Length: 363
Ligand code: AOF
Ligand code: ZN
Image (tube, rainbow, N blue to C red):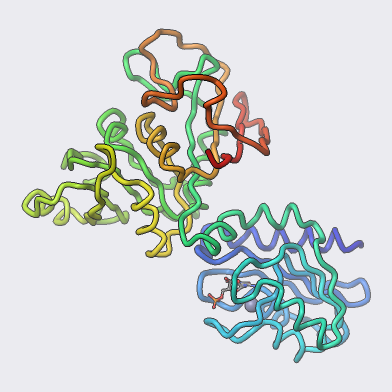
């Protein structure tokens, strides 16, 4: 097998940590001796042993003289565990093949340098694109201290997220909806505006067999979330934050009693200061947010410059009606050239639906 194939295996191992390792990276490692795989490992959950150490521990024979395939540059710092470079040197690994570079200021090339200085052959950038894709959240978070924000919406081919009555169940089919639940497992938090809570009364949980619920965040400037909404009624079981500018302690009490956390956030231009909210979430190690609407919050998020990626689910349906909701509301921009530009788009078919994912360019 070739370097790329072993790295492909390491990528698949890394993916097993999806949703369990945040805010740390997903990492996979494979040890190969004379064409035989003798050890495999991945980063299994936050705070546990790193992938490289797991691969060495799982070795079925001596790791002496082997090649290590690892999706991310090995660390060289004393963190929750001692440096992986140390474990690599001690185990007698002779060659290290790396996918991504680690932008963590504590590592950032120093891991590779250390290994080379100790006489280990290091090969860089093997399946780099796939490896980088694994950790777009980690790379953003470690460099900015703010969550990676994904704006997700489902719309018909005439650009509607609901019919004129407000009915929106369902725009997309089962495969697309399953993908949304996978993302609720992948990202640390899900965020919606008060308008969506009032219109849809969503639950925002991950309904997959071995899912884990994201933190639920409601942006509710005036604290209008109904106490009998499904989110509040389940707040004792599923972590829930209400971000609000309302400072009336009395008004907070019933929400706190129901299990919600009130997060005070100042206002900017009559709305919650979303940049400030993201900074606060980052301080709490929330590395990623799936923004699930509605249109007003989506527009505010774009204007605040917090959106990193857009996920548009497109359903082959037409609803018509000038009053039907669209994914991004607000006042909008005055001309096409003043728009928000998206790049690096990819297309995925999910049953009858199409998912378009694009990155947001700084505006
Ligand atoms: C991981 N898992 O498999 C590798 C990581 O929080 P710590 O002390 O465990 O250190 C985390 C840092 O270690 C992380 O930011 C990244 O730079 C590096 N590599 N981290 O969590 C792993 N290989
Ligand atoms: Zn490490």
